[in-house]
Image (cartoon, rainbow, N blue to C red; front, side):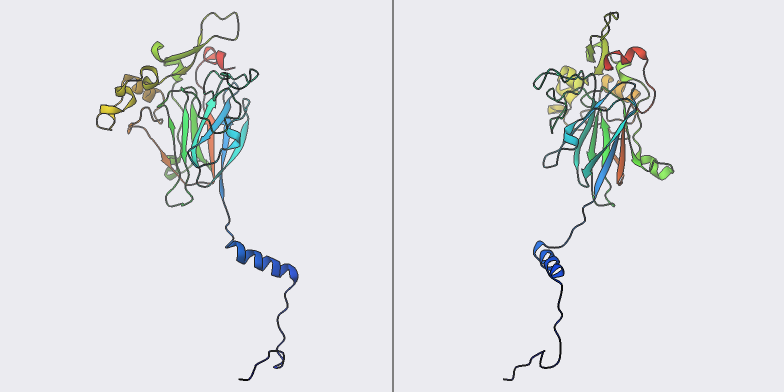
Length: 286
């Protein structure tokens, strides 16, 4: 059998630079190049007092922003998240971290006395933003604001650019019409001594849910009350509903605006999105 030679036929082989060969081999060995896109949450503090925002992931998802940080009044911080992240945001109030780990550092939303919660879930009661992100634009990412474990701060969530058209209004979860702490019944109140010695009365800093306060199956929607048909809410959840109509007030709450389902690259989570309460309501938060 005759051998055919490219050189004998006058065909010159293609010579690639060494850098190009290395890049080609690296691509072939490592597989296809995938461009990873993420999502940005702009966390805003519109309260007249400091807030210590916190995050906690669901199982198998990473911790964002070390799980917590300090945010002065009028300031914001951008928090990056993977495009498929699941977890929660909440705000902590009245924090003092000088005592060290293992002791309660915050009046509300505390996570084992740490500034960086590092995946730990905050102690209730606290208003919770629940997030379920999806890469698929057709599915949309969902988010809601829950008072199932109680309330400490009003929170609003929306996509950027800000919703303007009617079709985009479904992407906005607005804040509260009333300060829940101001209308919270005594049996649900969480109070703290005011920082000023001149003030005599304790200040309400959070409002428990009925489940958290009493622990009964009827309030917690479990056992014989563990379905939407048997758990219809209570006078306490209706109090939450009246003050914050867009929030989930108990586990089977279907009357709320509930979860928004909107795909976006940027979301805003704003604490105290509008004026609420009076000077007396702010004393223990400062």
